[in-house]
Picture 1 (cartoon, each protein chain N blue to C red):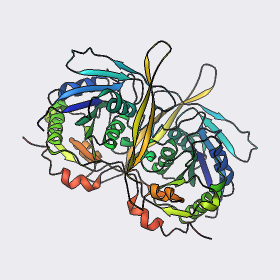
Picture 2: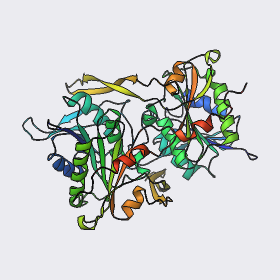
Picture 3: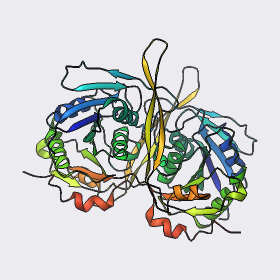
Picture 4: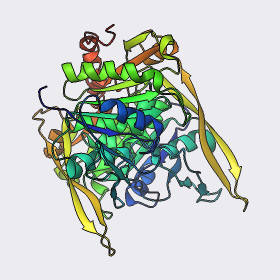
Length: 259
Length: 259
């Protein structure tokens, strides 16, 4: 790539989160960075888009800033759509999302605003990567992951990604010298066993907080959960064709058109 | 199945939408129906869940009603989680979502609250089907689709669905006698070309409405878009492993672990 890459940075924890600040600082080593991120936390908003409400954009930086930054009132997916259509002058060469405060491995990919932003970029034909650290703490230590982010970005800028493939990168909560390396994986078959925390309002009305326990019954050593549990960085290639191709033939034997 | 099936009905247009009222009336022919649906429109909320806010459930019907109905303050996915964990006495035999006012074919599956509710049921191990009619009108005519809903439900209750497979059913906007039958399909490779409608508040601040144009460049005659354009009901089996399995081997040739 001879011209300077144009890199869109977004996330779901909001534009002030330490995770995105770290990602912005790393991405400046690789190209021209424009940030379009939610103005408030948007965790677990999945692939939601805003169609029943208005969207606002706030330009945060002045024209002379090295990095142009915009906050947006919508979801992470809205941010990508607004960036591509209203803010950026050309299609970015790369979109990175994160670094998320908390895991987006296995089934979390489907609930994750961070990954949905990356997937939306993929739908729009932009190479995209979502990064997440297995630490929900706002003051999580992102230093250990810097060199791995650099390695992944560098390889993706060199080799590209095929159309419709997005990377889901998760980092174990470990010091740099404890991390064994980067492993390409598949999404583990895992799920959340919900537990609702039932409480009462001061007026006596029941309400609920969604909580849960993560259950991984997938024993495969080729999964992201295995990699993370064994101190590797997991990289899962993700796509957005949700067709269960393995079941098309069998489903054709169902007698849907009986007279 | 010897015992009466327990059927969970949900949607994303909200519990008062004509589409879900039609679905409820059809499902009563097949088993015991419990409705847990959003108390307000939740279109395009994707797989969002509510973790930064409280959830409320309202019991709408009295104990003697034939169909027990609950509205919920959360997203369609929240409704399924609350139904399974807090409302239903046992795991339902089937979850149906819809009938959505508007298409959920091709890439819409990923934005759709209707389909995300069905997918969530699938994640929880419940056979699930999402139904959508290609008519966004609140007063859309759902009569034509009744017999097709019955055929699909009947086959699924007879044959079941494998774990992790959900059906995405879309109906063309046609009269019953114009619909040629039911076709098993794959998700078409299509996308939305966004157009933001930029306006100004009375105070002079810019804001945006998300709109767009649907672009289908997939010429395959095995796609849901082809089926719908040719007056068939489309049935796409959907799964939630987002791994791009075809790219795992190639991604392993990337030099992520260079020294």
